[in-house]
Length: 358
Ligand code: PHE
Image 1 (tube, protein in one colour):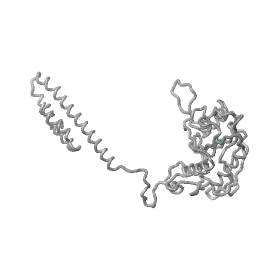
Image 2 (cartoon, rainbow, N blue to C red; image 1 turned 90 degrees about the vertical axis):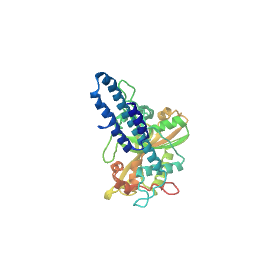
Image 3 (cartoon, protein in one colour; image 1 turned 180 degrees about the horizontal axis):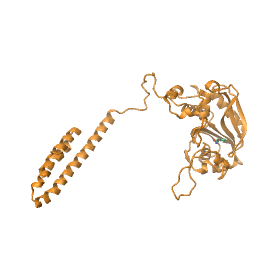
């Protein structure tokens, strides 16, 4: 047995590949392997001899089996390492170009419009802020002047996160709008303040004009004498830059718990002939909600409403993407249909800038 051990263990250790290992396995513990033959000879032994040799042979078989398994794993690791170092690739390099000439991937219209908005608002002095998509109900509702049992909570079709059994704190939610980032930014930076927050939001709603996940861009400007007139100017300036031409807008009086007064803004468009066009037709598409920030909201953000005031808006990124690029069905945005992406996608190397044109 000692001979078998000193014969096979070093051989296993020195094996160069899986085939060599398999040969050794057969030679040692395969049906006709040396260890197996020795085991078969147990029958010819006396009972005492067998009692001594049996367990030792079994132990040897186990030892060889696990040595082979360990070597096999080591060989696989080494093979993977070799492959990884041979096939490494710099994913930051531009594509070499397939059949289409340029890189095959394209930028989704939502990402494109997100970048376009950022470029335009950055030029007006707004910085980009961010917040979590899984939000506490305080940031998503209470701080925005939407107390518990307020009907707006029901209207939002909120997705609630599950809490562990017995944990009776209020559940977190998937944020239903980007407005909680208003509060987070006020708390972090105080006044004066000028931020936008593009991001994903979630509502349990699905039909031709609603998807359970969609995109908003929040805007917030706080100063000593910021007014509704500034809001209107900023938005019209934005639309002109974004659409590359003056578009007709309609400011409609509205209501949000977190702004007072409030207005919704529609853009003139037509939905004829299977596409959507801005600046013509008799249809209006609602693209944003807005208003003067409610004093309670300023207070929740730690800002004194006797000294500061400001405006806020929340715009649908997907909506303005549909308008600008003539995409009639919102649901197609999230179908991941390659034909759609190739048709509506953008060149990944052409980053939107104000000078290059958005
Ligand atoms: N949060 C509102 C919504 O999702 C939009 C909004 C933002 C309205 C800011 C007013 C001010 O519908």
